[in-house]
Image 1: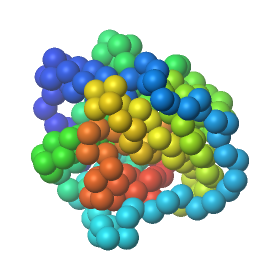
Image 2: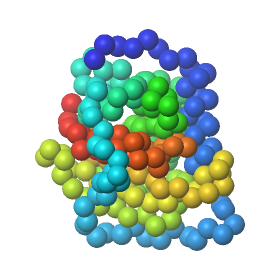
Image 3: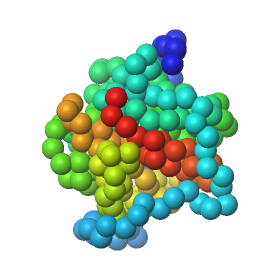
Image 4: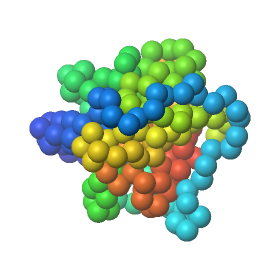
Length: 210
């Protein structure tokens, strides 16, 4: 994939901080405490049946990618990756995880993102559990599977948006690599739209080591 021109830092920071605010950690009055994650191994929930599967129109993470990563996965049409430099990443840490890449759906007309985070080496399940718990959540369920021989842990949960003052469905998956744990998170105001979930499922189902 050809290297894209750098994205303006101020615009990227604004989008990251805006959606980070949408997933804020401040308590919501009627929110129940987060329960311990389920350990039951059940298949990850696919995209809503009424939504057609997303077709791959590119990828991120491989040689020549806008985001050098220890993994790669396919991207839906009009989803564009932007690398995040270390200075900006330090402003949007989630626990020990650092934001390293942001894939935007802006050109598709949706306000949604696939955010790629890197955490230190360790069990992917523990890293994903800790990642989710940095924001207000409930109903966390972790499932394990193998995608093309790559072990993957997926999190499904409800997260509270301070911006919208409502709960929304959260999704993320993680895998361990020689460079640490990689977490891919679906985020944004339109994260529950069928076509956006389909783009997330495309990324998860095509994950492979770079």
